[in-house]
Length: 205
Image 1 (cartoon, rainbow, N blue to C red):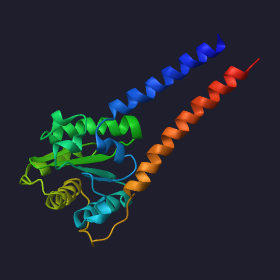
Image 2: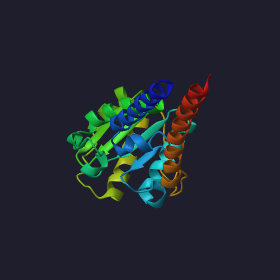
Image 3: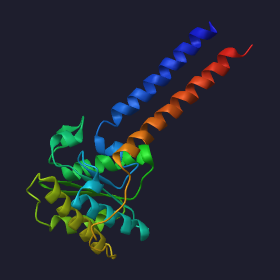
């Protein structure tokens, strides 16, 4: 009887984890809790535009005005929610909620797509009109879209009263390998906690 109850609890725990994974089905929401830049499937450190975005977001963090960026160049960058393709503002609001729910991030988020930009968070009220004045990138070339996004981030900062310098071409960041390890490590910790809690309960006299 005790074993049967434990098995049911394990199945429930697995279902909760699976539902969380499904709710988190867009790649940017998996990357941005660990890094400040999502540049499609590319490690931003390997791209000039990516390094420029890393430098801008790091400068914002030093000013205590955190900004994270999602560069969406193609529908597949949205994973399970490709219905939000070419809806950058809608996606910015959606992703902002995900980052808060799953990563407790409540800073500013800037999203770019070939047809424009979206923004969510503390700098959105002043940043949105600034982004609306910018020309649409009109390209899915990732390098150019990334550079246009870096300009957009600087415009958001300027609209909110602070300045972000142009990139020097360098910038650190969390590599894709480290992100994957962190995600796997988090899943292992959760699974281990559930296993040992159930084991202790089952072995009680």
